[in-house]
Image (cartoon, rainbow, N blue to C red; front, side, top):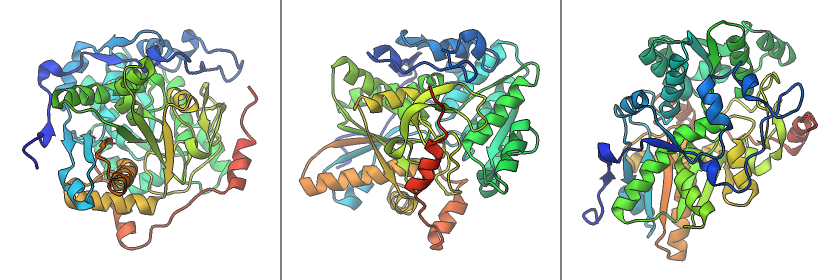
Length: 455
């Protein structure tokens, strides 16, 4: 069975992408523009440059250029861990008894343990090129903070990370990797910033959220000379950098002479999903091919499946631009579950618009079901997956079982965004039977929706 198609498909150095793909260039209906939180008018490049690096602002606002060259220094860094392998999950197929062909694009083959390094090195490069002293950021599960600390160490930048408090406490080793690479890591919400103190006062004992941590990181950036804020997901610039995942996957499938029918990715803010589907969605938008695309999110933070498509603040402190997206409300603070980096209250504007147009599907899954899939995958495929990635595994397994029931030989691709070796507290809770499923009530969401801004 394993002789007909290679088990792992690597690309040669000559096949590595030299440009990122800007999916928005092929969208007939573009994502809605960012709005200034004070004036509610379209945000300008000048306004964004007070917070973000100059070149990243250009990328954020560019929705017409299809390909943006990858700087040579970034390409050199990529060659340390790219291309990442496209792997056929033969053993999972056998365990499921499915006629489906299951592939996964594995992004855990670097020290940060995830796909986040693809954008971290790009953003650190542009910060260094601008002559900045350092950057500030937030991190949920810790993958983004880890990746950024590595990139900043490489380019000689100071790195300040505000880590969601429950993750800070659940994942001490992820925190220590960041510190090993020179980052200053603060549990959020903290007492270091004005917005952090306000959130602690309003929500005593809170375990934090990505929205809280973003607010603190932005405040820290704008209050220090020579610093800018960088973000690990949601923004168009991040999806742009992550398109290298999908570009590599598409080239590998072309080499195999195979075309995926269904593409599945976990979705928190949208970075890995947007990167994985980029060239495939581009073909779909141009009418060149069709794919079924499924976004998978935690039932505890269901932005797509239960959120509102509306303008909302990107952060809890309401200092960031307003973005039109599927949102649970900027004041929504999810339970301290093990969904890891999938705790953001909103979703990428690009993916939100695609979802609104019916070009992709979304599913919400409960975390005990996710960890059952994670352990099943680990036992047959030999990789311990991150909780985030395991959301995609859950639905990939479900789709493979559907193929078995229907007798269909479909090809399934999912994104294995990272490894779970720093997530052992979550696995311990699951194995000890102490993990529960939390789903917000309609009343809780209604209270959060009531605070959406009028735009």
